[in-house]
Length: 82
Image: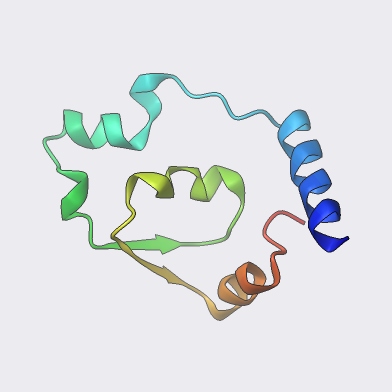
């Protein structure tokens, strides 16, 4: 039941706050334009786990994330958005 409740919250959040980015606004494009290989990014500092702050993490699957204990606990408890 909690999974359905969380999925509904995420759906409603995304519906009310669609994230639309142009190609040139995406982090992978910006790094490439600056001559930086995304594989060279070893650490990423996360201030909080809202979708607009973590959406680009998919481009860095091998990077280490640095986050506060509160962020980590929110992730473990799946309270990312709400």
